[in-house]
Image 1 (cartoon, helix red, strand yellow):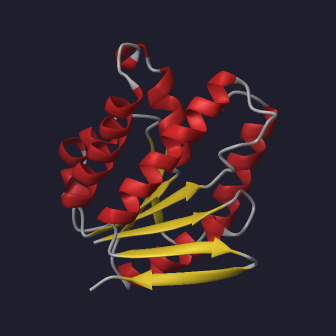
Image 2 (tube, one colour):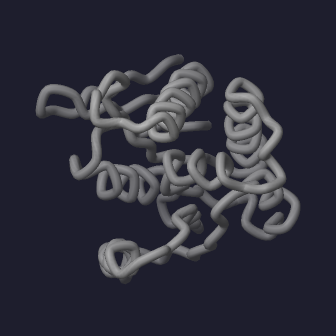
Length: 180
């Protein structure tokens, strides 16, 4: 089972994803998969805020900035858990800048990210994925940002097709679409 939580930054996606993870896990185990690479004070502050929000909720935290598919093998001891991947947007950026992916074109990079997430999802009880949506045509974007936003959009579209449930924050409200 894959649930995707989508929206622009700062709309409560993390809290919604945590609540859904707790609901899906019931009394079972839950894993928080952090993909953010901390580069500065703002990043450290964000990580601290997220850790505080998860306090007392029983999450096992795993930090993995890229290649999340490997966790299917490395952490087989947690296959019965419900996992929360926070977030696909960070994962995309990390994979884009990984030297091992330097020769990949954009479509291959999209496949790499989506297949990695799908592999992890297939090896665990359920996976809740958080991702960001950004305007595609912001004139302030430089070429690299425009490329990142386009790749992330393609990843989000692919994840929507894989997901059993998509919760999207749009026009000030959450909309949930559960596919049978």
